[in-house]
Image (cartoon, rainbow, N blue to C red; front, side, top):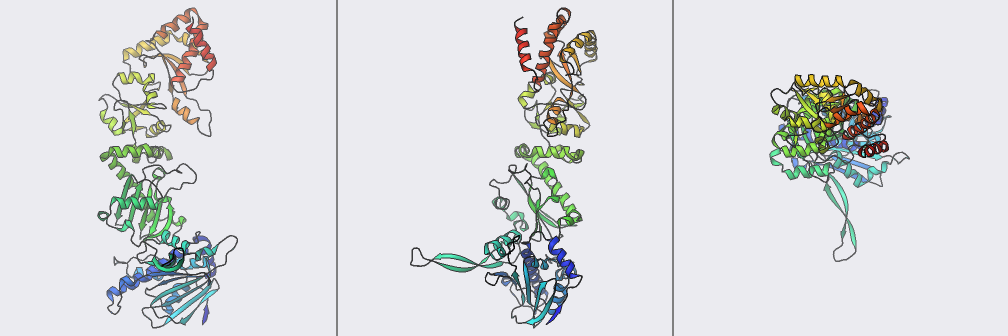
Length: 627
């Protein structure tokens, strides 16, 4: 028996791979099972063209054995096996892969489906074991050989006794340390769990001997331990099946079990794609927001598989943030088992798959909006805020993708509507989309600023979420129609004659407004008469980019910078209060200032703003009422 050294600077590479590529030690079993599956694939493929190979596909299997006393874990397969030369070539050189070579030789043949391609997965065994032996007999050899290694010091190959074709890998599990409990890999339940997690959809049965307690016949309380061979994996993934053969109940059951949800999903998107990159996707839109969605513990992303083998539990590169609530998985033969998160970020196939998934989800939502309106509104009431954040974030980078999915409450329709639906109903001469902001629909509906708009038969979008107005500002326009806040100072509804009349009234009352402004100091930019109010006496409007609602939102944030909207106190020129103020300016300027304070407090309350001096305002109101 000759001791050999690993090639390709094996000591350095083996250490680097074990410590860097794999951070989750339990995936060593995934790698070895995938290698076993590959070996069976190769033998099965050869049997299709080589008449000398007689076998029954139903006999193919992978067997896992545990021996706690000997501290060994064994993986056996009845695949093609390896010759002495192949053992030396495939296991003696890091990144040398028989699977990759086999795939390259047969890459033009459609039925070849090889999981492992880079040959580094086998060496993950050394994360959990201090001695690895590989006994293998090739379909092309009469002799069997054993490969033995304790890691970076090298390996040896010698002839051994093995009757059956295939490979047997035995790992001697390391002793426990303070940091690592290696003995868990000798626990039957733990190994079953790893298989179910990573290798549930390997196409061949993965079998283990499992102990069960059984009551002895003829006794009441006596039990005996029996050992039964069980197949641990389900073998056929639901996403590989024909959609026509899958019932809704199967989709729902898979979702609830796989993603630990007690409720059925709102939407299932099952897709098979062939082309530049091939993949299967099974996407679910939940019926409710994940309970931890707004916590630091939540991780977005889809499960990522390579030919049915899980390679990443949460691949966040597959979903944009605004679809972060989506659950599901992607399975692609174009991805390697041994890919790292850093490699994924630069993987061209993944970027294309990600873009396709994003487009598919958006298209399905658009179809739901068009054909299942009630269902879409249920979705939007749950996840609409996320779409709005997606529209607003990154300086509106994705606004064109999402704007037609947004819904806002309509003053005329009395329900949620899209921007497209609003524009289609606009009056021919109307140039802007009107909106108003407030805490609730009822409060907005009673705002003085919207009364005149409704009176003129104009539709208004009621914005009740903090982010809504920011979204419209980022959109800037829709279908060449700009957005107009009902509380903005530049609302233009008057005729030229009315504008001229109002301008003259404000000029004539300029000194009165200056006197009134002294009462509330720098609280407002200006005081003036307006025609925007029908029955209400007073309101607050804003000028500039920051509205009153935006001021409230910004000042609720942790980094509150005391941002203030530039507000204007507007008084209805056609209301009796206008004449009262004029009389007070002539006869009682002190009382004029008291009226001003009360009117300003009323305007703030209407806008949902607080007043700093409620006791003073209460006393003033009582004084005015008793005059």
